[in-house]
Image (cartoon, rainbow, N blue to C red; front, side, top):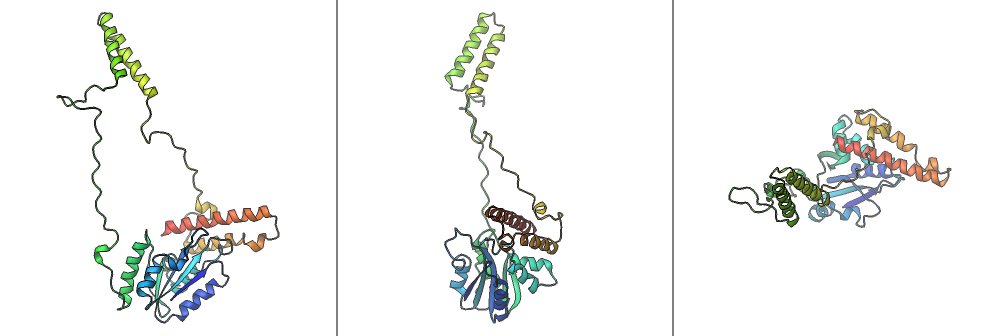
Length: 292
């Protein structure tokens, strides 16, 4: 069984709690992003599709999708569930809100954090589920994520031109450089072997080549990206504020831009409120990533 709830639903929190309270066997609860450009529904994405295909007979799933719209930006159903499951453990409550929660009979049994890819998530989820149900086999230990081949040592850069018997590179084959060197030597001989003009000619040849040469790849200047805003400053809280206090500040701030509160204003204020809402949400997500 797979059920999908959406942040934009005003009853999303109550529906989520009802699913958890009504669970009899194993249940997985997790949140996903579901933007407008995502064509596949949340339940068809990984690792949820693979879990349903392999273990759907013993595992129920409740997927809470955040569409990123203003209708749901002030809601935090997964955070509310984490606080309910772990009222005395803020760290576990946060892990439950941001990872995969495994429940049995409505009670939390394990929390699996999200990794870099759905394939890695699937391996660790199956490992945790195998400890809770005899009907789910343990994953292949040889395929455990994180075992990577060592990268080969970088090759030494090639020398400019073939080496002579002494081991030093031969004179470059550029005819302009050879011509500049010969003309400088000839002028030095004409001036009595002083060598000063020869050195000047060689210097001018090197300067000419430096001016005309194309810079090597990666040496051109790249425009710097705009500096990201400090999420603590965006939320108006001091750096290091405890997570529960930071969440209260985030909710109070995001509620100021609720669509109902700007409905009577001109359209340009609606767009401003939406941009400000997105900025606040991005700041909160940045703090959650840093805390994870």
